Image (cartoon, rainbow, N blue to C red):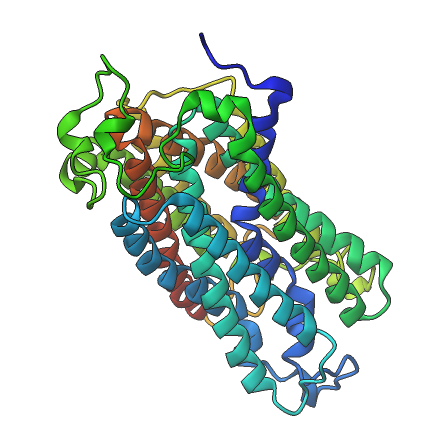
Amino acid sequence: RKPRDHFHGAYVIFFLLGIGSLLPWNFFITAKHYWMYKLQNCSDRAGPAGQVTSDLRDFFESYISIASTVPSVLCLIGNFLLVNKVPASVRILSSLFVMLIVFLVITVLVKVDTSTWTTSFFALTMVCVVIVNSASTIFSSSIFGLSSCFPMKNLQALISGQAMGGTISAVASLVDLGAAADVTDSALAYFLTADIFIVICLVVYLLLPRLEYSSQEESPSLATVPANSSAEDEAEPGSTTNSSFLTKSTGIPPLRPILQKTALLGFCLFYNFFISIIIFPSLSSSIESVSKSSGSPWSTKYFAPLTSFLLYNFADWCGRQITAWIQVPGPKSKLLPAFVLLRTIFLPLFILSNYQPRAHIQTVVFNHDVYPVVFTVLLGLSNGYLGTLVMVYGPKIVPKELAEAAGVVMTFYLMLGLAVGAACSVLIVHLV
């Protein structure tokens, strides 16, 4: 009997876990006003002397991108090695607890006066970013591997949830900016929202194994296997599962067949997110309104949160949702890498928009606010659609017993693209 997901419980849980998996990254990069406030010696009334361009402030998004992605690649390698040694539940719950503790520290620091130790605060923030994103990587890759053992709609729910997390963080940032008169009050409410959502993720993950749907799927990552039981005991009589894999199920999964099967998809995933992270948020969030001098809230306070963060994340979510109905091109189509490579055109489009401050390339070709809006929508849509297609295809083109490990490998391709792209974004920002 085909298992039924009553009231779409598993779908909703994977959607919520998807939101939580990228929550640290989204909440860190979207709180731009707060970081700029903290890194300007906590002075909102800085005169010309106080407006001297600070390296820490101008390149903060690039630094935070590197601190988020480079350690994450190492954590992904560790997660792949541990995929059959440490139960998914242990990896997921421990990483969620680490994320919660670090976010509580960040929340407390909001109301601490750091004006006399700005550089130390920056260093402490980077350490928090490294720890929380390392934990987030283990959590997201473990959840992605786990969802690969379920029907494809649950995997799609997880990936859509990741994009919705960005939209939620952008909306939360806008609401807090508008509702709170003080920057620190806004940031306090903002980071408390993140704390609460991590707790929600803990609760819903603990509910997942209790669903009848989960037990019928008999996911090995959710099942509690006694320490002295062998993997063969778990296999059903007459099952077509590869017994040679089962006998090695407590060791490291075979990497070569996974890499051979997913090589092209892996490149597509790498390059898709490589281009996206170079542009967002380092370039896109520093594009200013051409009418900034008018002093209107739209062209100053709300321009970057709306046109960069909210618009990109919502477009990204829409792109991911479209894959639920349309899945073209296919996993072996030559059009898939062609479309991914075509996204390179976004780089000069954003550089030639009203990016500020500019040190070397003084030409602004797209000198109207509508241009970055259109570019950001297209960047987000293409990132969400193509990235989700590739992520969903990866675990489905390998044997089922390798699906979870293939899910971790696909996440590695994604994080490698983000890490290399983050490093390149620093170079690009300095060259502009």
